[in-house]
Picture 1 (cartoon, rainbow, N blue to C red):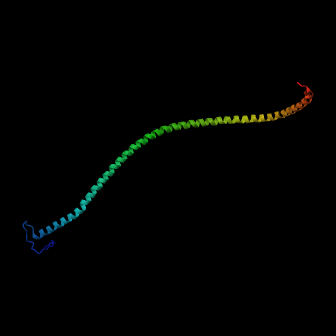
Picture 2 (picture 1 turned 180 degrees about the horizontal axis):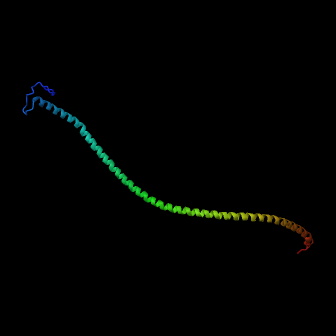
Picture 3 (picture 1 turned 90 degrees about the vertical axis):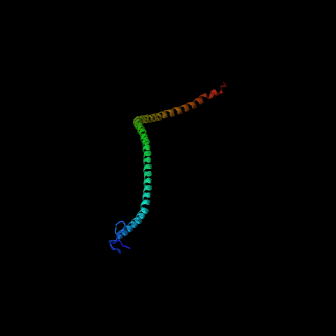
Length: 167
């Protein structure tokens, strides 16, 4: 048999039916068998790899599809949030106006309280004067009470003889 390395046991002039040299035919036959065996080995690697690629591509498409649906739902939710924020902005404007009004009212109340404080000071001064006046009046009232008590005693002495009258 031939090694296909250019040396053969047969002479180089021997040909087969197709006109090729005999040892070249053997080499081509051996090359074809080796190629077929190699192709089978590659088929064991390439076909499962292609199947895995198809599965991964389908899963990737599924993920992208779900992501686009989720983004659509998120966009709709954001529209709702934006509409709600418009209402919040309108309400915040009203709240701001009410706070400004309350601030004005508190300023007015502080002014009124200041006037009330002055009125209270005036009232305290007048009450102090009344207290002094009442203390001054208390002395004559005490004297009047004593005088009335003495007068009552005097009347009892004067009225003593009248007790005998029956009517």
